[in-house]
Amino acid sequence: MAYNSKAADFDFTPNLQKAYSEVFKLKIQSGRELLSKENPKNPFRIYVEDFADMTELINSENEMQYEKWISREDERLGLIEELDEKSPYNRFLRAEIKLHWALIKIRFGHEVKAAYSVIQTYKLLEENQKLFPNFLPNLKSLGCLHVLIGSVPDKQRWISKLLGLRGNIKLGMNELRVGATDKIWGTEAKFCTIFIQAYVLKFDDKQNAEMLQFAENQSDNLNINMVATAISLKVNRTEQAIELLKRTPKDAAYLYFPIFELYKAETQLFKGNYPQAVLAYQNYLRTFQGQTFLKDTYYKLFLCIWLMGDEKKAKLYLSKINERGNTISESDKAAQKFYKDFQKTKALPNKTLIKLRLLFDGGYFEEAQNELVSLTEKKFTNTKDQAEFNYRAGRIYQKLNQLDKAANSFERSVALTGSDEWVFAPNSALQLGYIQQQKGQKNKAKAYFEQAIAYKNHEYKTSVDNKARAALTEMGY
Image (tube, rainbow, N blue to C red):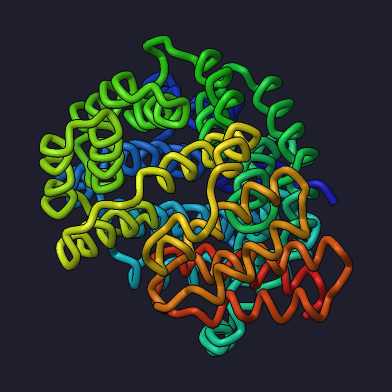
């Protein structure tokens, strides 16, 4: 059954569809200009205006603007709620607005309020799905929520069940694939699919190729280019990120995103071009007025200056970690933990291990392996460095498909990890799970994934737990 966007009260005019497309591409000004030509009470105008507000707030992290605009959520929801309940767009657009504000609240540190918004979003979408099972747009956001709820670790699932939330990764990914066929919201559904695949599930060569093709097909979409660049850096493909940055749309029609300065900095850091990295990190600090990634940026500036040999100046950046920024992102949490550990021990990290990590993070696996040739566990004097060395070695061997060597190194890292706060054991257990899964050893893989989840106090717990839970679900546990 097809649904006409011109049902009572709901008129998604060609002009409004164009405005939505412009906002999704991050051409916010032209999107708003198109919106100004439409009836202020048109629910699709209200929805696209909300989308634009979300984009600007998440990018700027402007607290004053947030306080000024926060009342818009309830105002907009109230206007749409009064409209034709027989249209599938009634609940869908309300759910989208609630989801927008959930993301905004997370960015501004209001996690509890955000969680409540997510619960309301989920219930609206589930109700809409029952009433209109063939309504494709609904599958975009519902699919995302089914995957995210489905990746919650077992020990926390009682919360989801208590709140009436049901997760299912396989169902969610299928919903996203079907949702991607929608003529209007399909591009956004595909965008969400790629994001979830990289940040929650596994991201392999096939998915990488699909992402690059998607970005090439949408070459004027800054949003897609941005997420493709971020994912490329996350999955150790620095050279790919550099090529994407070269193709980034740069004209004044697009909203300026300081995050691109960070992406440029990361590529230079991984390539060992420390002076260029420093300039880009400083550009981020100068152009970004918010709080996210500040601690991580100061940590990276410390690394660059320290690796260039100026320890005194490097320590000035190290002290800044505690002075600015928040700890919403895992990278900022890691930077804050590094600062606190340094305050306790006054010991700087092992330079060899830092360089090994940067080569790996950049995707320069063969160069990293060359560094490993002259290294053994005995070259490191303390247990933490030995545990990290084995974890780094394991990851390098794993990327080069030397799985037995990788497994031995990961096992050794787990054995050496002496604190629940060290990230090496949970990450090693996660990778051991993947190796056993790849070998078809389901029971062994299950044990390792459960072991990864069992570690409680490290700074990457959310992402490790989500990935381990997703892998268990994929295997049918």
